[in-house]
Length: 294
Image (cartoon, rainbow, N blue to C red):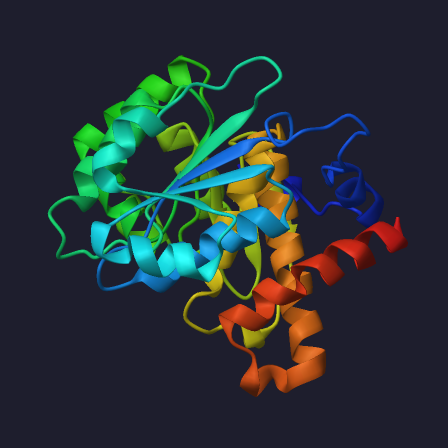
């Protein structure tokens, strides 16, 4: 198969229709809960950025489960967040229920030297009865047979999983499977089929695939090539999943809002000066501009 023949892009009106506008009688639970198992002692900022992006993307409640050394910093970043130490993960792994949608994000800001990282990813994949996004160093837990078995089990149980690798991370996932990694478009589809996930392969042009469909997103900016912007993207995708979007739509809308926010920030600050916090703060305007275009 030549993947290029089946690649498409979402129109602005299609994207706008996916924005989770709250209904009049909404409450924080009906708007969805994202539990973000993110950050580490070395990288507490990743937890801050991903969690705040989730709030900006509409999640009614964002819970952060993080390294105990990072708890106070994340609480200080956003008082509206519920922040728990990793030891409380078991109580945070509630299932999605009718009228109370939920999703999980795991891996942003994990420290590869932290022996707890891979077990945390495996625990979320094994026990979360809800959609899961795996990002950042958390992806390392998938490049082995145990990780692939967990993904396969989730696929068979109808539990959506989204992975969000950049080119290097995608190559590491592909290598044990013998998949070619020189074409990000084909790689998004082959990873999706091999792992039973929606694969969002990030780059100057970003591709998302659920195995059947491939979506191209070419609206990014080099301003996004800064540390922390990937954590913002992961938080956006997780929040959309938590509000009930299907996995491919959540990946595509999250990536498009991320790109638009990057362009909004760059228009104000230049491609040179933008940092992840600027992208985060530009998300509301990116949403507003998308809705106006529809």
